[in-house]
Length: 279
Image 1 (cartoon, helix red, strand yellow):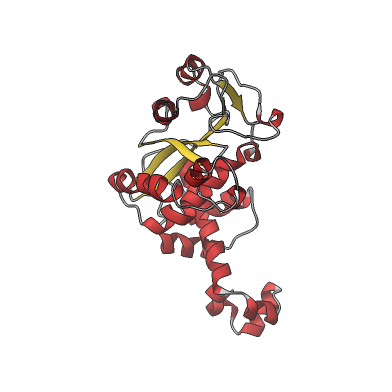
Image 2 (cartoon, helix red, strand yellow):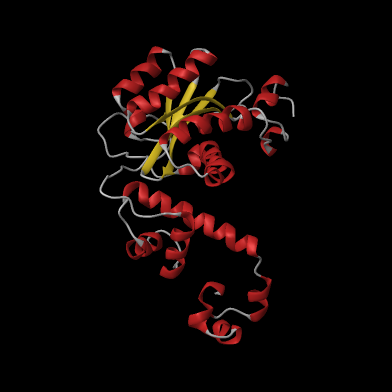
């Protein structure tokens, strides 16, 4: 409401028009509003990956299609604040496209009661980083035992080579035993023959989330949120070169070595592995 005082008039008038109590108005902390703006920014970014030309007018119904109503003036303010300008004419595809004819594998995670050793289950996912003239894509592989990033790859393109780069790095550095579960969503990058052939060559057991169910890959969702909120949104990435130079430093030097996890007894992924999983 503070962003629309000119239209709403006094606090009393604005509260009456919006149905907000005066006490709620004055108690609303700045930090809470900033967090809400960052969350809106993240939702706008997600839409822009698929529809980079959307301005605030098209964003409003797109946002409201799977979320609460949002004022178009707030959308425009957040876009200006974070530089979320429409990107034309280049088109992008969403990070997950499960509309393909490749085989889909059963979700093997429910059969696991507990992960007691490294290289038992790996999880894979893709995210995007907005730069001035488009997006850069990041593929990562986490060891779900320790939440450690064991493989990553950065590219301007979202294709099989992107995810294969992360997988090949992880295999080279970790040398997983036969039977290690590789879990991903049903995206075409993970289901295509080139990727599955490499999995089977190294004797992985492919596993895939149920369609449209991000909770099956919750550890990866959590990592991506950490990456965005603790590095990308604070890093002011402008170019592809910025991402290539700085993002790996966050992954290797900060996230793997220093970032504490409550699920690991407030240890970093590397310390948790070094400690043999003892919290």
